Amino acid sequence: MVLSLPYLKLKDNPIMFEFDQYLGFLAFLTILTIGFWLMIFLLTFVIPYWVFGSAIERFKEIMAERKEKR
Image (cartoon, rainbow, N blue to C red):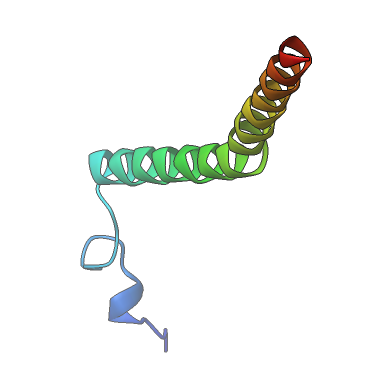
């Protein structure tokens, strides 16, 4: 007596992807992952660098204007 489970057959399993669907799913995951890490990079490095850099430059301009007035 051989036990066979019909839902484990590859042909009849509705959960299995076709190859092009699998490639599309991998492309989606890749784009999603790249977008996630890009947002992390922008929020933790680029935006604070830009904000603090512009604030320091503005502070230097204000100090230069005060020096000229004296």
